[in-house]
Amino acid sequence: MKISARNIIPGKVTGLKKGPVSSSITLEIAPGIEIVSSITSESAADLKLKKGQKAYAIIKASSVIIGAD
Image (cartoon, rainbow, N blue to C red; front, side):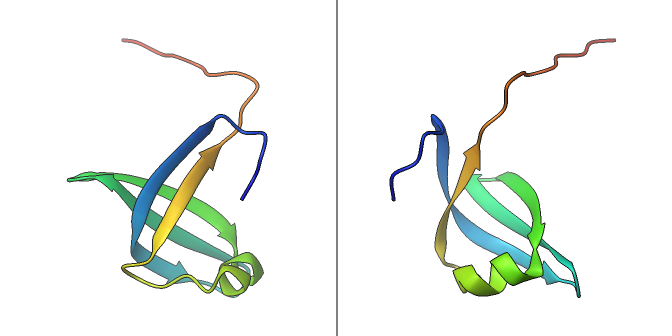
């Protein structure tokens, strides 16, 4: 897999919530640390995602917003 994004975080699929249009995918990227992504259900099916499978969170953003109280 070759892509232009620089922020590629490996993880393991720990949760799948499939809906008719979108699916929520949870990746554990470190013990106790998870990233959740919403993707189309068609994409989830194409990727053949299942619990325990190795997958990657790929983050491409033109800006990162920081907030503080």
